[in-house]
Length: 77
Image (cartoon, rainbow, N blue to C red):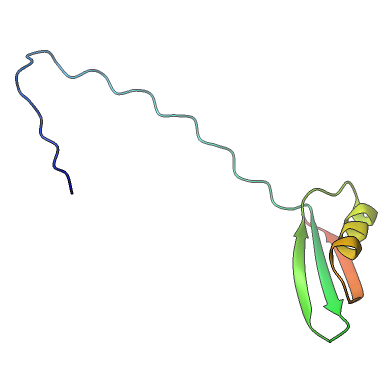
């Protein structure tokens, strides 16, 4: 651990603090949710953020996952 010391040799007042950096906007939530049931009976929920519409989100889920028995896609508000 390092210790920082201040030197009192300069008689000038402290420089004004730099303005705070602008806050980043919150990450936008995924516009679609996909509830997927697999052939073995397990299930999971996925967020799909880069789909154009529900059909595109469904296509992406079916292309990316294997052994899908059913998929339900909803628009997230």
